[in-house]
Image 1: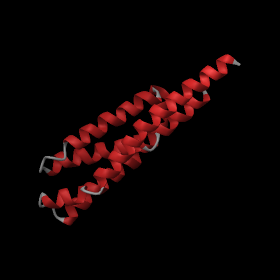
Image 2: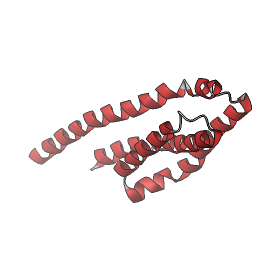
Image 3: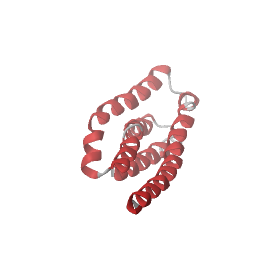
Image 4: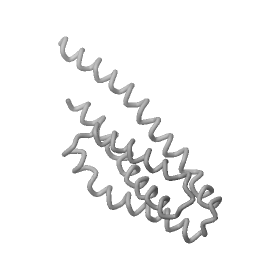
Length: 131
């Protein structure tokens, strides 16, 4: 029917914009990940301190990841994708500071962003496809 064709065209348009945004998000996460250790090392942090920063990011991702699905259901997938962008931006804003506590906050925010990145984007696509 005509309404199904229109709905299909709208979804294809959504797919193209979704793909562009999600690829950019995944690429930015991948791109900065390779240089974080070198950045922390250039600030003069010991391997133990750098390990603490990395573990904090992984732990925050693990803890927050347990709640991401429920939050996406409650607040909406698109809003949670926006929350990803905000937490990622804030995480990146901490990188120029040679202060362990500031970088720790950034790692926690980065862990939250990672949980959102690898959860809500795909959930948004599935939800849009089902509608």
